[in-house]
Length: 120
Image (cartoon, rainbow, N blue to C red; front, side, top):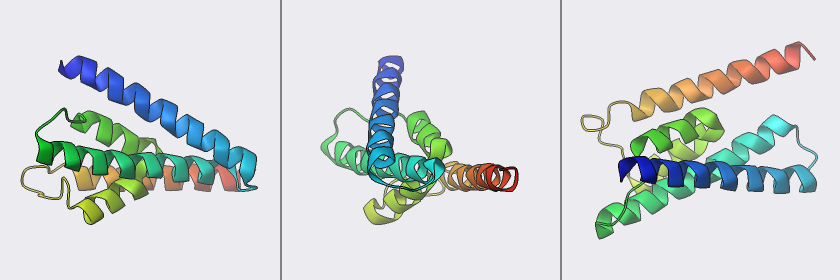
């Protein structure tokens, strides 16, 4: 069941992020990477909220690896905001990887944007 849940939520995260990205691309004049970060962050924030509600209800959860991948894939701001707003996955003893992965995601995207803007 965990593999199936990973696939379902992973595909859902990718489809929703791409859909929101395309909406932002067609309605704004922002550079593509800002649109991607905004889209991925919105999805990450929504996933944190959904997972918190699911945890309280005792129903199907989003696998932690999906939350990590969304944060690394550009949703680091939404993941951090989701942790703070929903107070979800914020117990560092039980979930020691969440903050480092969010920081790594931000740093990687920062380097990518820096590289893209200096080599343009």
